[in-house]
Amino acid sequence: MNTFSPGFQGRTHRFEGRLPPGQYPTEDFPVLSAGPTPNVPTDSWTFSVVTEDGTARDWNWEQMKALPQEEPEVDIHCVTRWSKFGTRWQGVPFDAFLDDVETAADFVMAESYGGYTTNLPLEDLQDGKAWLVHTYDGYPLSPEHGGPARLLVPHLYFWKSAKWVRRIRMMPDDDPGFWESVGYHNYGDPWREQRGWSD
Amino acid sequence: MPGSWRSARLVARRPENATARTLLLEAPSWPGHLPGQHVDVRLTAEDGYQAVRSYSLAAPADGGRIELGIEPALGGEVSPYLADTLPVGADVEVTGPLGGWFVWHPERRGPVLLMAGGAGIVPVIAMVRARREAGSTAPFHLLYSVRDPDRVWYQDELAAPDASLRVDTLYSRNAPPHTPRLPGRVRASDLPPPPPPPTSPPSGTAPAAPSDAAPGTVPSSGPPSSFPSREGKEADLGTQCYVCGPTGFVEHVGNLLVTAGYPPELIRTERFG
Ligand SMILES: Cc1cc2nc3c(=O)[nH]c(=O)nc-3n(C[C@H](O)[C@H](O)[C@H](O)COP(=O)(O)OP(=O)(O)OC[C@H]3O[C@@H](n4cnc5c(N)ncnc54)[C@H](O)[C@@H]3O)c2cc1C
Image 1 (spheres, rainbow over the protein chains, first blue to last red):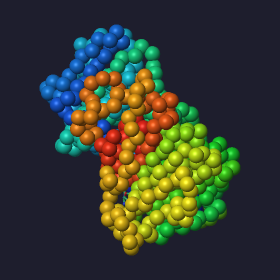
Image 2: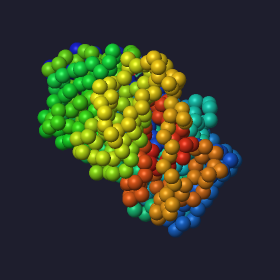
Image 3: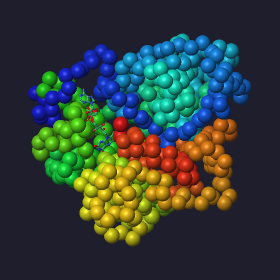
Image 4: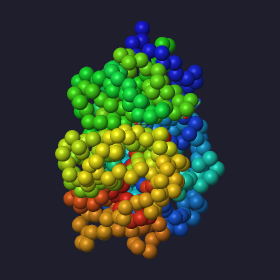
């Protein structure tokens, strides 16, 4: 017998198998950000990949748009407990930025306009698991959702999909990013419910 | 071991206005929390189905006693149940405290600008209460945006005189008679002037946006700003801003603050959805 919350019924839609533990489905697109939304014009936008020895490869907006494009349709899961199914994006598969990069690093720091950072294992950006996206649902990605371009790493909690990303920096040793240093889990797998330090 | 859940018993419920409710819960061996933090509340239906939502802690902990403030969302799965159905004496489960960024540290002496929209007042009143409890003299200024006069939360408490707490209530749809300000969303003219820029920027601080930059524009070169770094000395003296409420409110107010010249790295936000 359940002893908690007598009389609670919940909704009838249950999405078993598609909804990670502790999440609920939403039709909205809520926003999680630590500060105000930066406004980054595309004509001064650049994106770089910087290796551990300081070598940088840069792309401006046109160069990025000229790279191969894909249209991933993925489920996304935010640590604030909403999940959104079948979100449609357009962007560059992340492997395209790593093609000519020589690195022995196992980790990266994603750094954003506005100062946000998040750390990931490099392999989580490889082999078709991640994108740099600039279009959501057919429209240019809006600033509050990370436009003009953000990372999309749908197999991890969505804070890892850095908004307003400007640089990927290779790190031989792992280092916590912004949310990771104020209590969020270092890796953030929604299926293992890795929300906080104690999980 | 994802999130450790503890049971929490509803010991009292009090209306804040026609729809909003304060809930007092008893959560044995609650570890305490900082003002601005939240809990996740888990409900379980007869058939085992569970739903979890986040709710801000409205006051400093009193032993195991924690306070929440719930605005029921029309057609919502969890908030109408918590606001009006959960019986006093019954249990829910909570985990927390959660959130290590949208917090005010009572030992911080610098001025604070609080901007709350709707239910966004909940973590903000926690900061006001923690300040009072700590005997802090940090100057607080609260800009509180509410739709109508009958939507105000914590009315008497916010009206109580306090020399270093200034409260401005900004009505977005209907104001009480004789209110000089026309109702409407928060405007640039509602903001206090931003603090003057520091005369000699301490090392490691974010470069200030050039004065000719478009409003809210981030310089496109240079190192990332220090916004995510932990509070340093300079942050201790600048006006720290906290903005909380529905996403539309937070986006709007965040843009107003940056345009007005508040340093982005001193603006902390919490979006309720
Ligand atoms: C860090 C944080 C702190 C928060 N603190 C507070 C707080 O202190 N106080 C507070 O009141 N809230 C707070 N919130 C918001 C809270 O977590 C919930 O999002 C809110 O209570 C709505 O939850 P719900 O289950 O009632 O609504 P949901 O079921 O999640 O629905 C949200 C809205 O979508 C609509 N909707 C969605 N699906 C359906 C459907 N199938 N049928 C009908 N309608 C639907 C509902 O009408 C409703 O208006 C906080 C959120 C965060 C992230």
